[in-house]
Image (cartoon, rainbow, N blue to C red; front, side, top):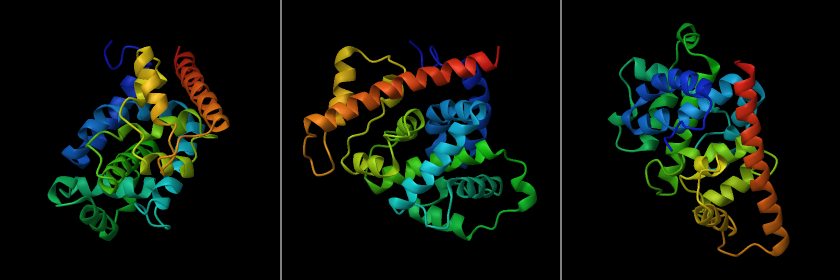
Length: 237
């Protein structure tokens, strides 16, 4: 199956419009923007409560990891990145992510120009920055953590900022989260994905009760994701 074979056409079209803007931040974000960023863009554009929830999650998650400061938000940093790119200041020009982020912190956005970008475009841009920041912090492969936002979108009650921080710290999250939620992995691939999450950040295997809670949460995440896609399709018919 192709990447978009089972995703709402609305997500694809609307998300692509958002991602094309986000990709201007720099080539290092182009894969995020054209892939998972397009999915996220379509979902948050169609489902306002999901947009609000993932923004709140991302702020707490990234602040907890020290990628954002306590007075910063994904939307504001996304806005700065978009406006900076308009002035030729892109991620590619910096030796490392922290240097780029410090440049964004010193950048003064134009309030008038801020209105040129929708709140969801700013959000997706900020999430892309966050993905890159997490990868840099944990020396992960480029693009391998693009999908870290999907489990909290699908089941925010279980995949809290604190729990996701533990999973990322333990190196247990991979790039196949989207395919898992879409139920496109083989049985063996799904089992591997699930077993990777059974370890805590200390490398200890969860006990029976914790594993049961995890598997219930994953099943709920898949069901919730399917419901989200159905709602998007239904609302656009």
